Image (cartoon, rainbow, N blue to C red; front, top):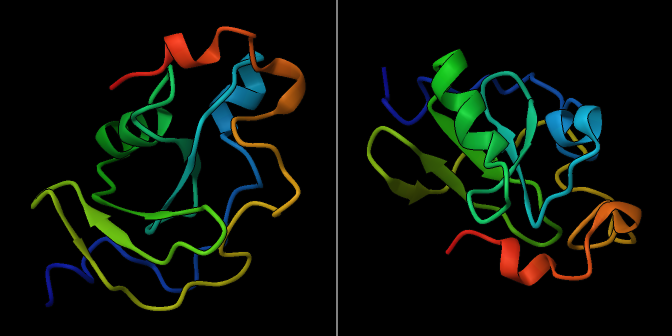
Length: 117
C-alpha cells in the first residue's frame, strides 16, 4: 500500500469547525489541522496547546491536512514531508468568517507572545 495513503480515510468527516480540545477547555488556537484518518480537528504546532500533534501521537494517526481556507496540503508526521493527498469530505476548512486566531472571544490580548516558534 502507498505509505502516504496509509493513514488517510477518504470518508472521514471533520469533527467540527474548531479545535476539539481547545473548545472543551476554553482554549484558543492560531491555525487548525484535520486528521486525515478520523477527521479530528486540532490546533497547529504554533498554537499554545498543539492539539493536532498530540492527537496524532496518542491515536497513532500519522497524517494531517490543513483546515485553513485556501490551503490544500497534507503532512505525514512519519516522514516529516508535505504532499498532495486525495479529496476528503467537506468542509475543507473552518468557515472563512471564523477569526484567526480563534475563537475570537477567547484570544488573549498578548496572544502573539504565547505562540510557539
